[in-house]
Image (cartoon, rainbow, N blue to C red; front, side, top):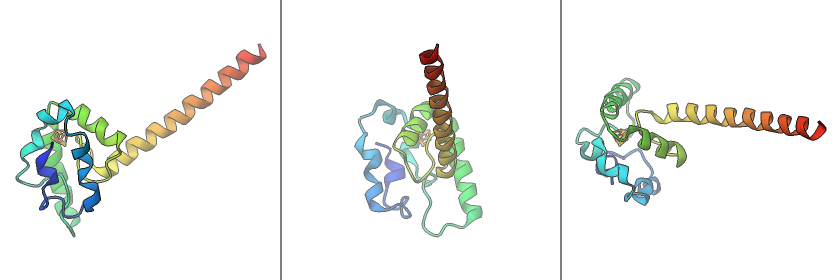
Length: 125
Ligand code: SF4
């Protein structure tokens, strides 16, 4: 379990019902190697009413931690698949994850169109 992001002090801006999300898969192997397990600085989730400049600075610091984390890819994919709506996961903020997910959806739509077009051509041929 990634303790620091889930401590009550550090997730003040996260609704309580969202906190157990990481707890649900706490047995996932990647959690045991998470660098943020001891996040005393509270870098990964915003405190309530955090000013924009402080948020940007905190997120950059969190990303630097993620950059040295051996399970960044697994963490990021987890956050995208859930999806996790808050905090920095796998080096991405919530807003950045929304952009990635939107790109993935657009790509999937385009792929499905291409498959349908190919199927129509094959059926006509
Ligand atoms: S990538 Fe970042 S948020 Fe994810 S486990 Fe590692 S340090 Fe924590």
